[in-house]
Length: 121
Image (cartoon, rainbow, N blue to C red; front, side, top):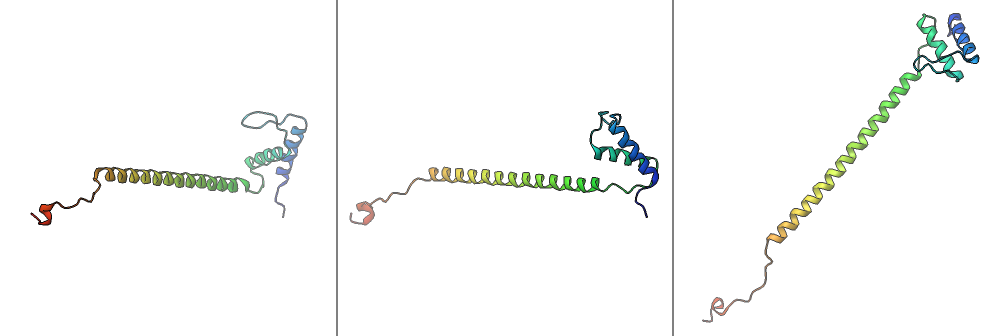
């Protein structure tokens, strides 16, 4: 059983002919189509619009999933980087607190007991 109907084949053929003669333009920007693959894609999409037998698009789903994966990885990297920075900031604050506490506490010096304290007087 054929994947593509006669109608869809005709649409693709027409699109290829227009491309060859420089008359095929893309839908959105209106620029001339130079790519052979793009011309085929335009012909197939026109056939789909008219209800011809054409298989569903496969590449768009895969690409969207791939984009989502890439975006997720980028977000995860940003989260990890944030956590690292937060840890560094916390470590610096702890060090500063320790320094301040050490400065507040006077150093204990060994003092020899006086004669009164020794009980000699």
